[in-house]
Structure formats: structure tokens, C-alpha cells
Amino acid sequence: MTETCYAERTDSVEDKLRLLRRAHREGRLDVALSLAESIGDTLRFERQSQNNNVDMPLKPSQAAHVPELPAPWAKWARGWQQCQRVTVEEAAGLQRSGEPVDFRLDVDAATTTDLSREVRVAWVEPKGGLREVPSQVIDEVRQGNMRSCRLLFLADVPASGHTDYLILYGNPEAERPDYITDLQVHGEGYGLEIANNHFTAHLAAQTGQVERLRFRRGHGDVPYGANLELVTGGEGHGEPPNIDWGPDYCASGNFQKFRLTAWSECPNYEIVRGPLCVQVRRWGFPHSPIHPVFTPSRCHISVTYTFFAGRPYFLKEACMETVKGYETTVIRDDEWLFYGLPFTDSLWLDAGGHLHEGDVAEDARNDMWGVGFYNRDSRDAFVALRLEHEGDKVAIKHDGTPSTNIFGRGQIWCRTPLSPGPTRLPTGSSLGQKSAYLATHYPEDGGAQIVEATRRQLVTPLQVQPASVRGLDTVARAQGALGRVGETAATANGKRAIALKKLVWEALREVRDDQLMTVDGNVADLGYIYDVQIAADVVHIVMTMPHRGRPQHNFLANPIRDRVQQLKGVRDCVVECTWEPAWTVSRLSDAGRRALGLDP
Image 1 (tube, helix red, strand yellow):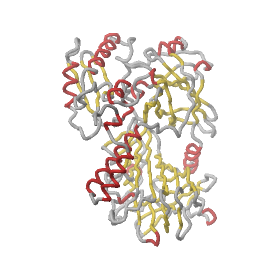
Image 2 (cartoon, helix red, strand yellow):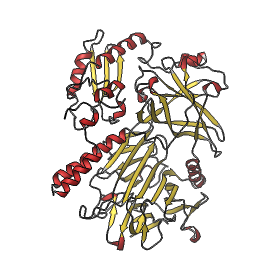
Image 3 (cartoon, one colour):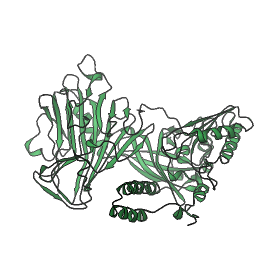
Image 4 (cartoon, helix red, strand yellow):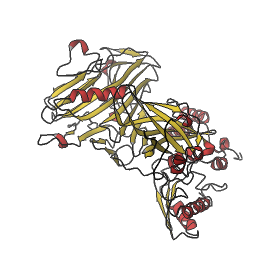
């Protein structure tokens, strides 16, 4: 068969399933395993091509042309061509400072080339000035004539008020912004160390589960303070000892447990790394203690941790979805265990969001919306703020009474949302949760208010509304400029830098990935180039490779360097390779899609 189009150069999921069934029927299990892995690869490609932001719609405001803005703003934003306005509204009567807002941004694909490089967020100050605020682009996707992404920034909004922001894009010479925040990340994959000014969290290298957490503040001459570290000791159940043990479930008749913490490695995961947010999502079927003897595909579990710059909490969202009906004797979906008795007293929140110390009231045991502990000497507290907890096609309860002493060495809470005894979960049923885990100072006076206000903020998040740029009622003024050196012609030596940068991009379109032997697969149109920066006569290029099976990046970096150094005015070219963020099909330009035979 002559391969002339995309469908002829690969195989569909349906084709592979047919081949897998035949191989399994014929007892060719090696071939069947290879086909199963190949099906996963095809599904990952299809998932890259989908818009994963559809569940967070925001009707976009009508884009405005930056040159048409009031003169002071247009001058400040020179180099950018498009902007949208959003209004961030506060409805809980709480002053918000540096609070994350996360929403979907859609733009006309013809107006931008790379949202991760181009998007900037400007705060419209009360007196009419513009000030850039750090932002982060997540999950950029190209679909048809639109580019979509999640856009995250930290907003300041007065109690019961609103704040306006301008979203700017449409500058092909823009460079990936390098924002400095307190959020620091070390490690690769999902076994990360994530720190901000409030805590350092360690995720297990084997499973990505939270294995320990250290507070990063001191409160004077106290036994814990900055030295408080939450850990779990012992041998666990033969699994890595984590402080977060859920979700998991016991099979019918209590025959065995199925646990994410028994994964030898995450079967599926996604990582988001940036200056404002680190997100680790893992999903798959939990494993038996004697895996792979028992591998039921019944309860599919996904878990997402989200850590923010400047926030004393992190989020955990989890879903247990019944793919095939099954019976369970117990499900645990929020279980945390600490060794060493680091706390002295327990905490809990009732259904109204009010904090209580000590024993849980009998009539509240099945309707708690927060649990945790504090130390009366150091005044440190760790609290689970339960934001969402619901069942679909199954009735649940909200229990999980905290215990300050278990086995004489541990402190634990464990939520079991189903009533005691065997429960049949029908196909299509699910258990969903979202919680925030707060590591905070808990002063004797005002500690309860800190916890309660944090939960109120989280259950009443800031709302982002599109608005017309022309509807801003303020006197426009601005100082300085948005563009950095090399991003606009208005900066020092800007005209020369912009002209040279255009030549660099043209040169990159002459460097081919010659493993695509008969098409024009150049590194620019294939989306391998993340950034181009000019510093005097030195060009700095950030690139990636399409997947980790090709780690020898100099295969392309050397010809890139050789070609760029031929340009007049270039003394040296430095090429840096990164795996973050991972390359996806959405990075292809229209020319790149045509070269690969994909529908543009």
C-alpha cells in the first residue's frame, strides 16, 4: 500500500483492537501486549488533539486591537496586537490578595503563534495605570481556527468588589516570560519536591503520592515550628509509606485491597510546571497486592494535586468511577496518617463551615466538612478543608473522625463515604471529591477565623467574567513598557533585535528533522522551538524533542547552531533542550500539519 495520507501512515484504535483480538485468540501474547501498548499511544495522540478545557467555559469578550486602546495603554503595550478584558468579581465579602484565578482563554488562531510565549496579563489599577502581573498558560490546544488554553494568574480583589485585567497576545517576537515567585520545583516526572514559603511537599518517586510534608515557618522557641515534618514510618503494607493513603477500596468479602499506593509506577500521568502552579495528575486502575494475578478493570481512579505560589494550602481532586459494576465492603477516599504524634489536639468543621476543637459531636460524625490537627505549643495546624464530596448513583456520607493517637504512635483521619457492609456500585456510578490541605499557623486567638476564612474563599472562588475593553470607565495612564529587550522595536536596540529574530526564525525553517525523510519537517513548523532570545550578538534558543525516546537533542541542536551562526551579526548560538512542557501535536503550525498529512 502506498502511504500518501495520515490514515495510511498509522493505524486506528479499531484496527489495533481487531489485531489484538486475533493475536490473543492465537495465543500470541507478546504481540497482544505490544498492540495493547500501541493502542495507548494512539489514544494519547487523540487526547492531545482534544480541547481539555471544555469543562471550564468562558464566553470570550470581543478582542480589541491594542493600537486602538487609549494612547498611554497602546504605547505601554507596543508590540502586542490583540487584547481581551476580564473582570474578576468577589462575592463572599472577603479581601482577596494573590488568589489564583484559572479560566479558559480562546483566541483566533490567526492572531497568535504560541500562547505560552505571547500571553501577558495586565492589572488595570484603580487610577487607570497598567501593571503586568505574573501569569501561566496551561494546556494550549489548537482546534480549527481557534487556540485555547487555561490561563492562570494571581488576582487582588476588594471584598464584594471587582478588579479589571487585560489579556494581551499577538506578538510573534515575544519571549517566554521568566516570572520569579516563591514556588520552587525539583525533580522529574511525578516524583517531585514542591516548595513555597509555607511548606515543602515531597511526592513519592514510585507512585506520585504525597509521602511527607515539612512546614517552612518558625514561631519562636517551640518544639516544632519550622522543623515540623509530617511523615509516616514503618513498612506500610509493603508499599512506600505515604502520609496520603487514599483513595482505595476493598473487594467483595474483604478478599483484598486495591490501591494506588501499590503501583510500581504511575500507569498514566500529566505534569504541569510553572511559576504559579504545579499540577500532578495520575490515573488508572488500582493494583492488587498480588498484581497481576488479579487485574479487574472496574474502579477507575484519577487523582490530581495542585500546588500554588504563595498559598498555604494545596488541592487534591479525585474521582472513583465505576467502569464495570462491582461489590465493595469499604471505600476510603480521604485517609491521612502521621507518625511521631506531631499534634496535640484535633479539629473539625461542621456542615456550616464552623471550626471546632476536640471530639466530634455525635450528631455531626457523618456530615463533617473539614478535619485536622493542631499543636497547642507550636500553634501549627494541618487541616483538610473538604470543598466538594458527592456521589453519582450512590448515597454517601461525610465522615472521617480524626484520632490523635492510633497504635500509640500515629495520628489519622479516614473518610469512608459508603455505609458499613457490602455495597453494590452500578456501572456509571462515581465518587468525586475536592479538598484543600492547609498547613498554617494556628494562633490561640484568631486561629479558627484563619481556617474558616480560607474555606470560605475556596468554596466561593473568584468569578471571571468577559467584558468589553471599550467599557472601561477610567482615565488611562501608564509608565514604562510591557515589552522586554528583544520583544518590541521600542526597546533599546529593539529594531536590530527584532530584525535578527525574524532572520533566526526563517533560518530555523531550513533545519529539518531528517527522520521525516521525504517531507519538509522543519523544527519551527514542527513546534520543536519553544523560545528565541537575542542578547547582543548571541542567540539563545530553547527547544524540545518530540518524545523522550529521542533524548540525543544534539542531533537537531547542532544543525540549528550551525545554521544560525551563519547569520550576519550572530557571534554565537546557544541551544538549550527542555522536556517541560512536553511537546504535543497542538504545537504544529498549519505548514507542519500539512507536512505530516494532518487535517489543518
